[in-house]
Length: 155
Image (cartoon, rainbow, N blue to C red; front, side, top):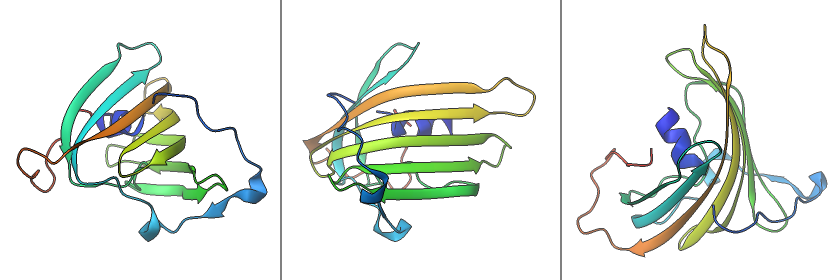
């Protein structure tokens, strides 16, 4: 799940200014935007780690961290400026609890960014806080279509 979380944290540019809570509109899971299927370039900057950059084929996943495992809370809200705020508190099959807050903005078809903060709470280990910024840019069609469930080098 950490690899998926790293993908979730891929940013360039500044995040849009926070909007008032009243301007948030819930987004049903079935309506969460997807990135365009194809070849993407992603840059990940996790605080305290070496930046990561990769170009990869994507099948068109949702642009926020998807619901995974048993979730106490999972929600996505659209701000008046179009950005998505997402919050989740889920436990994976290994018993690791992931609490995630993110702000995602941009054009899901060509270029978008994300700021995120995650807390990873694994049984018997101290909590790990992961703060990161990411940026995704559409490059074009994949040299060959990605296989369903194909591994992404960024997660």
